[in-house]
Length: 331
Image 1 (tube, one colour):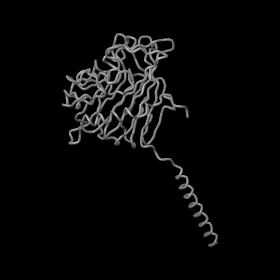
Image 2: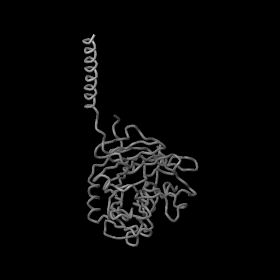
Image 3: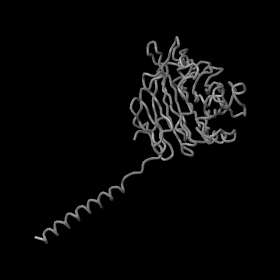
Image 4: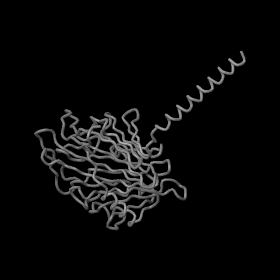
């Protein structure tokens, strides 16, 4: 009987040990988690994370007037951007952190939220092939329809790709926005002459020149609104304080790509805390089926108050990156 018990005991032990060896063998097949991920969340949000920490999130709720990115974080757990104007939240409700829109598309206002001829930008597709996670970057592709609010008539079709690419982790990273615009079949779409659109940033109150004593700097070495307002530049930086700590300084550099219709282009920038990269300040841009509009913008998020040399260095790095393919092959 004793020999039988020993046999059963060692048989069970061998079985358990065999299972453990099998489990460990299986673990050798487990893939590492990409350092940068675009993670879908409930309520039409995609979170862009570096090693599990959110740097920004893309919001595309169909009830909103347009998609936008919020928050924008460096290594501190505060946003470098805000929703709305700190002193005029009602009529500037369209200041949605970082956003894409235009004041006059086919004479329809997609910029404001309370226009007589109101437009709305709605996401109609986020394809499975549109998400990509790697150790170097994460990206998301979406299709947006620009429609007239009055009758939901389609005015413009936009394909957009957002890429988050860390340089020094959360301390320094790029957000790159690629877009292609085309009109509905048989139509023409026209971006009118306007200083409002295509991409804009509403900085945190503490970063603004008026409210926080922040600083505006462009690629030509000009400083603050009086010098920078609607002047041509390759990039424009807005830096200031985000916390009261000694190292609580950070900023963002909005970058125009050389492939865009105008480079250097006018930047519409205010001391009250916002900056925009103008697409069609002085002359309209016509978009046809044969002549689609392809643009690319960058946002360099950084800690500290960036120097002109640092901003220029990162603009050159942004401009040198391969232009993304907006129509990836299905996997």
